[in-house]
Amino acid sequence: MSPLAIVVHYHELWLKGGNRRFFASKLASNLRFALTGIPIEKISRPNDRLIVHLGESASVEEALRRIGRVSGIAYYALARPVARDIEALCAAAWEEIEPLAFSTFAVRAKRSDKSFPHNSSRIERVVGRFLLDRLAAVGRNARVKLNDPDVTCRIEITSGPALVYACKIPGPGGLPANTAGKMTCLLSGGFDSAVAAYQMMKRGAHLSFVHFYGTGARPGESSVHVARELLRQLVPWQFTAKLYRVPFEEIQREIVRYAPEACRVLLYRRMMLRIAEVFARRNRALALITGDSLGQVASQTLRNIVSVEAAATMPVFRPLAGTDKLEIIETARKIGTHDISSEPFHDCCPIFLPRSPALHAKPAELEAAEARLDIPRLVSQGVRSATLETFRYVGDRVQSVESLPKPRQNAALA
Ligand code: ATP
Ligand code: MG
Image (cartoon, rainbow, N blue to C red; front, side, top):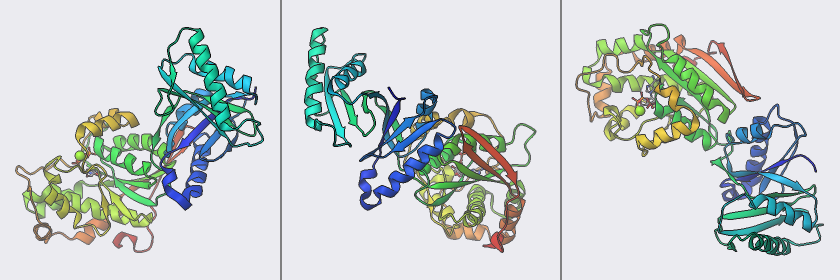
């Protein structure tokens, strides 16, 4: 029999009406890219699913593992290719469900090739009857339940071999990568911003990243290596990503020198947003992302969040605004950023921390607190001193290239 196939079911895409074709073809090309280096015969698209036909020498485990990081997938399954006759379907269905523990089951058939002599409901009835008889013969007590059964044995009649599978693997959900436009994420080394980035990539946004670091770190302590490691973990979700690294300590020193102590952290954040916006524009991103979570720390009270945001001219998305730290940490574990964010590193923000930070600053107060700062000069200083690293995920490897960020004309002051 021909090599194995992986059946991929879309997620949410049925919502998209007329755009469905666009999303499905983007998902197919993302799958193809994610599987680079693994022999694939073809990816077919019968009805509302995709079928990845693996080549003879393909590693099944590797293919399944990589598909687990392709967003837009509700679930996927390794399918058994079977000759297109009803006895063979019955035998394969039995092999699929026999090792599973269940008390209710259903058989679901789909015929994308209508030349097969039996229609879907007849296939379901015949195979279902066969399975019931075999289960009874081996003394197992199971019954058919069409609505929400413990196990569903699926049969797909394609123009090639028929496919039979019963073990679904949950996919990551979301929408296909790189379908929702561009955004720029302020990435610290902590748990939150990496998870916030993942949430937005999963909704189809393509992100560039900006990381601010302290220059006072001793070798090996810098937060830059943490940001880079996070990027290596995040880039497979969207295949390419830029990381702008901005030395921030000199800018912080000016804030410390010329602004009231209680507002320092909020002013750091406002400068971060302004500098990140320049890189966002350079990448044609339409919005910023931060890992803020309402009330998590003093700088994230509702009033402070609003007053910090007032310094930005672009919308700021905060996908974790309503998420608890424990849920954030759970997602960080799932996407592999948890251990990286747990590493100790020299963070730029805690330095010169005020003894008693402002809890409910108003935008006008922060503007007044910035009165003695030369904001355009500081923004341009941050932008000009940044370095750029470009990451690319291909063939299950992450490559990165260092380069100087290329300023577009007047971009620093844009
Ligand atoms: P995280 O929120 O990622 O766990 P954190 O807790 O150190 O890191 P917060 O003080 O909660 O950061 O900062 C709120 C948000 O501000 C971060 O989620 C991130 O988007 C942004 N931010 C903070 N520090 C930095 C930094 N050094 N570089 C880039 N963005 C930062
Ligand atoms: Mg945080």
